[in-house]
Amino acid sequence: MEDQLTIREVAKQTGFSEHNLRYYERIGLIMPIDRNPSSRHRRYASTAIGWVTFLRCMRATGMPLVQMRRYADLVQKGASTAGERRQMLVDHKRTVEARIRELQTIVTFIDKKIEYHEVLEETGEQTDDTRRMIKELEAMYKENL
Image (tube, rainbow, N blue to C red; front, top):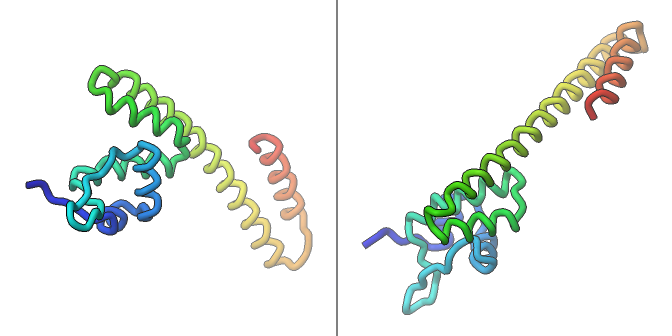
């Protein structure tokens, strides 16, 4: 017999809250979970951990619930949908990579601002260096954000 886990154990292993697990089941992202016949508590198959972890990764990277639902529907249809599922993941990966590039630009901007404050703190006044830094920050802002 396959190992079975409580909702609390699944939540702990995946980082999802129990509430999120119930919600994802209710909206069809997680297939209906077997229940203990006497207590009616959910009993997750240990194989559910991989699927729930995948869902958490997709959500954490900004995949909308409607796309996640579409993906889950395709999984239920079987191997014939592998190409469409692969393309969904390729498209999502591109979106995530674009967001990462945007965040890297923002981190660079923050680093420059920290450097500006360090120089200002060190000198106690505006200097040619701080004025140059302000111009660089303004140019960076206009160019990237």
